Amino acid sequence: MTPYEREGSNIKGLAHIYADDIYYVNRKEYVDWAIKALTVVRSVWCTFSGEGESEWRESVHKEFIKAGITPKDYLDFVCSKNLKDK
Image (tube, rainbow, N blue to C red; front, side):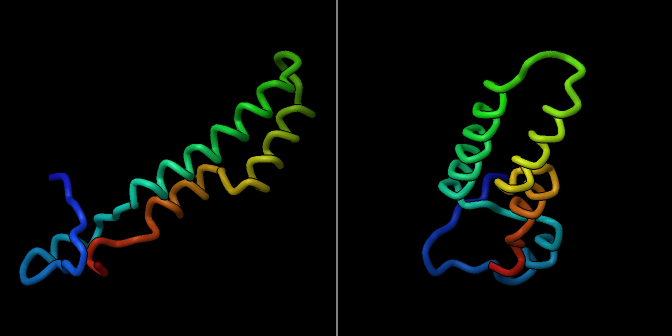
């Protein structure tokens, strides 16, 4: 099923009980998040000096946290809007 949003629409009746574990993301917000993440990944990739660089990995980790693009941040983002609340 590909849900779509129509202005003023709500989930009604029995469909509401099936929406408990279904989340949605606005396409523009998703694209914006992806662009932000890819921008950070590109910038840190340019600083890569070789395998085994623990200092580089630590600095990249800090950049990801600062930019809000860690795996946890991604899950929080895609699970922030529950379809049943729509």
